[in-house]
Image 1 (cartoon, chains in turn purple, yellow):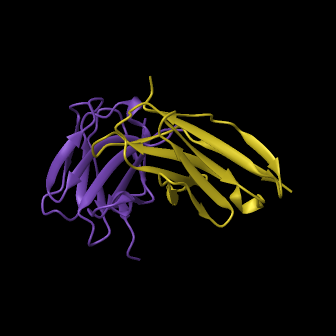
Image 2: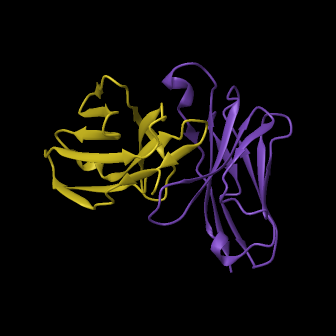
Length: 117
Length: 109
């Protein structure tokens, strides 16, 4: 499977614990995005990488959230001191930087569903 | 004001019907527009990009109206398999992409 891969698919944790999710983008894609989606809502932008550089972060992103993409390939999203309000689906998407609208097409992974008890 | 607004529906239509969804966006500098489809408990998947001149892909037609800042999706001859949530996506003039809340469509036999 050469699509976007996310692990784990499900994570159940207790409030206050730290969690880390991993995303492996499509191999030649240099752009990587993290989104959060709750029931009945569309995906909400969290952050964006171009290669290893984190270029944008949502102003809504709490400082408990941190993301890395150390070698410009896979990325991790860590949530520290989880709260019940962090329960959501966390989606990763990747795209290829190129001119024209096709360069903006994002391909999504299946997501990591987080439940904070 | 939200960056992207969609009517959440639900839209319940019989097979064979034509249905249209609209989506408005707030940033006049937006350059890229898409419709994604999301099935229940699945990830969003690209349905089609939206070009300035409008574009068609089989039963699906997408249009962009920059003056009024909205995009539309028309589905003709609805199939049962078209039942899904349709997400409008707009870039924010930079590299952020904003999704609408999605419009739920159920095609009824």
